[in-house]
Image (cartoon, rainbow, N blue to C red; front, side, top):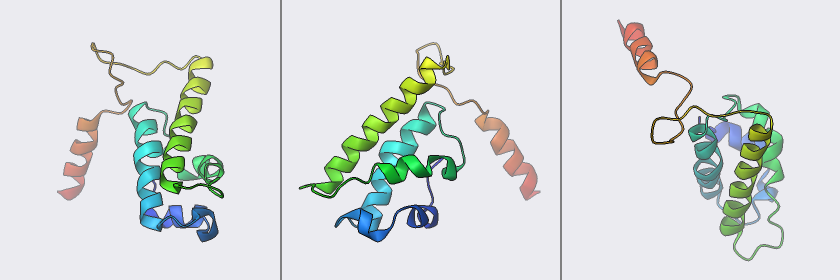
Amino acid sequence: MNIKQSVFREFIPTEKLNGLNFWTAHGIVKKYFCGPLTAHNLCPQKCDECRARILGVFRLDDAKNPAALLTWILRDEVAKIRDENLSKGYTPKTDPLGVPMPESNPFAALAEQYEERK
């Protein structure tokens, strides 16, 4: 699940962006935090549960390139989340090639959407 722009705006005060454009910062968080967590089935599906982590990564005060630093910190944060979950015994479902599989059935979700439209 990707964080919505309105939720991101609530989480991150403008002064924490340290010169980054709002849209750039939002895109980086979606790509390097929300995307990998979703791919590894670690997304809690409720953005409020990640609020402290997302706010905590905006330590960009003395960055020469805030976008690069934010990307680096987000990747590190995702790795920490994966390690925490693996140490708790979480093993993501994988396909025969070892690629993580989503917990939910995407076809069931499509069927539900189809039924709602009828």
